[in-house]
Length: 224
Length: 251
Image (tube, rainbow over all chains, first blue to last red):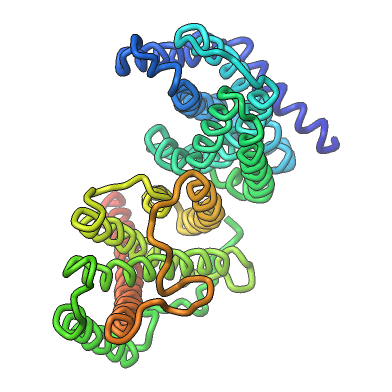
């Protein structure tokens, strides 16, 4: 089997499990939506604060929901010796990494689309610069998925993984949060020119973590 | 597990006993010198007054933190490289990260104490402050991973890989936060031209601080390493005695 079909196999497996269990749709998405609602309780919705800080709130919500999605991506292999089975299947570590990252990225993209729409409607955001917004979201999602998969496998199988994963992942993802928020702000304010350097930064982050993940996933995977 | 840690050069102490003693003594002497120069010999700053004296601790602490995290990365890479793999590097990496975290915390704390009288605030959303805070949490995560019990080889590999991943994030954090905002004073001693902008006793005091904190770091690293070695021995002994108990004392 070549690397491409291995990747397709892993990504397909994870997405199929999601299609059947619908954890993302029935639990992670509603979680994100309630966070969006809670921000409106915390910040007075009448004074236009929400629309101004919408990019930041959106990405915080995505980050929190992503933590759940990443944890889920590894807990599905927890039972019935699934992880051992997968390890014994003789797949290449880097293919498993890419496959799982793609599955997470697809789920995050759906999450971002729905939450983005929710934010636009509930916070009254006027949408400008769609191209830059989509490019930002794509680069940020790749970064989130790559770093998330890498840290996900690191924490997978550990006893304190539920608490360990956020502690490990949130500081690492701080630049993604920062870059994506600034790029969204620039895009929405109609100065997409300022957003492109941030998109470049997000892309570098995504590529870097994809590279490191492909190298490191194999040995980490063997130990979980 | 077919792989084994190379124990041939396993050592109970990082530095030979005599060298360790010399480092410890030099550390004490240099801290004494720093105290004298920092509090008495150096003049108060024209603008910042006595608050500026905090810099004699703040800058060296930041320096020592960078050195410590650098050593953690280096030791982790040496562990990952099969030819140099040794339990020694794993212990060095962990010990250095712990000390680095303390120094980073100290840097933030001292900076905050200095910021209050000089900037008028305990905390400012300045690039270096923010990236230092993120750095603190990055290495807190690394130490959390280290704290998870596992087979020594598994734990060492996991830790080494984490250390490298964390280190890769440092420049990205630094860069992104720098773009975001910059209010911090430009580096005075370690500026790009390496041409210190302060002179005389103040510069001397700062350099004594850097030397003192570097020595302190080496001294602490040496101690922490010994402790890590003893901890590992204790774990093994505890395991042996537990097995002995379970088996009803039958050897």
